[in-house]
Length: 608
Image (cartoon, rainbow, N blue to C red; front, side, top):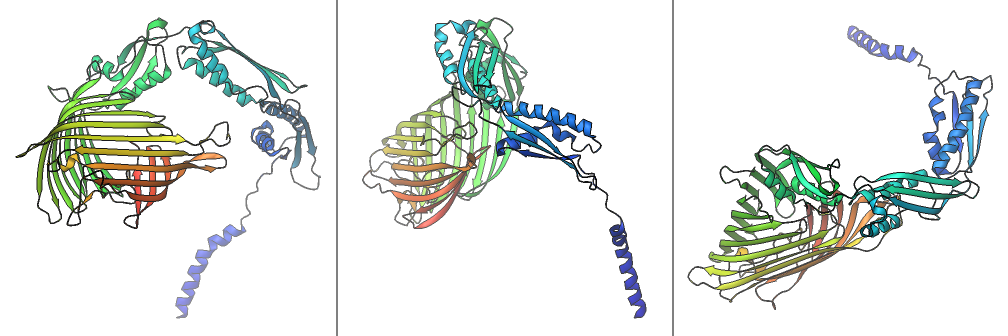
């Protein structure tokens, strides 16, 4: 037993010995600074000086003698005046003092810089002049006025170097975004009078020649024709140069799916009246397979697979086939799209089969569609023929089979400030169709659906860092639809309406609002009306609008087989929004007044 105890103590000493040796080793000495720097000034100025004074670089040189330190202090006074001048303080009083260290101590010396900034310089006059074609061309009068009216550093505003640089940059940007891409600043002067604390500013912009778009020159093409790229780009050849128009052209090519990268530049080396636009292109792979896993509060987990073939053999059309599976809906579909013609119209044909189980109603449907489509920056148009077939089983009711063929026209307009994360603007969509039911009793019917969405800013907060931030906005939405036919017409349920869910009436399940069946199931109805009122407000942190917003909303929707039977179901709630890089992320808690239940709703992205 004693032998065991001795072994234990021996092992303990071996474990403790390194620690004891380390504890006895003296810690390395940290070399003191040559001096401590103190700045006595208003907070904003003190932070600026402590961050940018060149004197800070010499604190670690512990061998500085008094002569060298005196020279550095003189340079520090000049450096302080220079830094203050960038903030508009040209008559500041600066004192630099050294407190020597007693010989009996090893403490570093103290340098104190005391600043009395005085009154900042303010702009007294501003003169913006032009040379080149812009100076005397009547058509450019509005551009000249825009540059002058947008000048941010007006009379009686504080002068700073950053504000002066930003104002010149903005004026040059306004000049070069349209007609004059080679414009430049030919002369600029900020005449400062320290005695009167005033600044007289003058700027001369040289426009250079006015440019027009010439031909589109493609580089990097291997598989696709130049004609296809020109039709996808829709570059307005012969029109006045516009940076926004060129960016839209670049975005159209990037969004086409045919290219992995697109970069457009204007060739200014030749004739300004026909300047070529050079497109550097890298083609996407001929085929692409995308597998996806997702989740939504409407339908739970979701699996998807999408295959794209950009150029089918012989046909030269694009084929997109997609399989989507979730707990309520399973869909398999394919779409073939022809290259655009000279007017940007394309032939499109598609087929889809779907199994759906919603609110105890099971629908197996097939759809065939063929027609033409045209998509532009703001307006989309579709003209097509469509065949629908549906087998619908509601609860214990017998299965109903229905088929129809119809001719349809759809028109959509989008006028949002940002199509991915809009904060103002509106969108409107209209669908009109008419056709016949198929089967033993053929009946005519017409179908109409219209949607509208608008964002309306409510006001502005005080300026923060020179930028105005929206104090909030209203998001208003309305939707109405109707299928007009005889009461006994067997119109497929896929041509009728359901509503409810994350993007329609919150507080209710996905397409939970419809016509109540005799067994308690919900079926599609012939008339739809819904709307939403939402107040969105940014969360402001330290005077700046963050990427997060709060929302309060009221939704309402109704579906019925007659207009008189429409009875709104209301949902109220609150939520948060995050302006993510991929689009808005919404998280809402809504209370369904009719069901007396609360539901969580989450959605990602924006589409209209």
